[in-house]
Amino acid sequence: MHELGIVFYIIRDVKKVAEENRVERVSEVVMDIGEVSTVVPHLLTHCWRWAADKEELLKGSELKCNIIPAVTWCDDCKQEYETVKHGKTCPHCHSENTWLLRGNEVEIRELVVSG
Amino acid sequence: MDEVKIIEIKKSVFADNVKDADALRAELKEKKVFLLNLMSSPGSGKTTTLIQLINRIKDKTRISVMEADIDSDVDAVKIKESTGVSSIQLHTGGMCHLDAEMTRQGLDNLDLEETDLVILENVGNLVCPAEFDTGATCNAMILSVPEGDDKPLKYPLMFTVCDLVIINKMDVVPYFDFDLERCKKYIHLRNPQAQIIPISAKTGFGLDHLADWLLKQLP
Image (cartoon, rainbow over the protein chains, first blue to last red):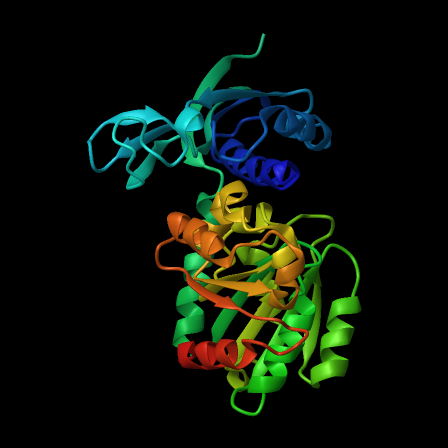
């Protein structure tokens, strides 16, 4: 539901980087999207199409989403587990003293550019 | 053919907003202004709660209200008519949340020298406002009984970022499968430090407690 707002942030950052590097055309923007980041990749690419085509720099460019699997760390038994499968409760020792290690990313990884 | 190359960025999309929010928070602290960011889903009773709360504290502190809405000013008008406190409307232009920059633009329209407490009524939504730090001193949310006691499980981030959870519409508990203790447990699972205050904006239950709590937080 907030994907369009996020697309506007991405566009702002990409424009800044493009300006700094004197880039005329961006053909691809590669994102790292965590599995539990609350960003829905296909909605993000959908919003991207709509918003990016309004920008000369980004017209026709593709937004690619790399999905980062979510992993949680249990502070009691010092083991990792898959967040999506088990949630907040550690499957090894049933503790709730657990923290998300990764899977919350909404990051711009790289740009493919020309010009 | 144009030369094609790759520029590595590796940067969170939220990084700039976090920076703006931290700067705004520091500035407000300096000016001794407390910014309360109030979030909730639509229909939780945010505006009614605000009116009740403001009427209890407006003689003790100088208040301004900023109403964020996608596109209307019904809430700003209602607050002003019911409390006499000045209120401005921020339009998000279709966006589902406010960020630090939009919040700052709103604050620029207030006289902060003459204000102790700014209440920001965020867009009614449990997902997006939690993602974007507004620079607020305190994040609060209202959960109403008909929404169910399982909301902290379904919208974990919202409950993780909130310092205060107000549980509204306690007067209708007998008609719903809402277990207050279970709800508190779910909230503390997400955020062990969260302050939880049950109220009914309609009957007035718990509002004095809420008013006292808020007054104690002010600088």
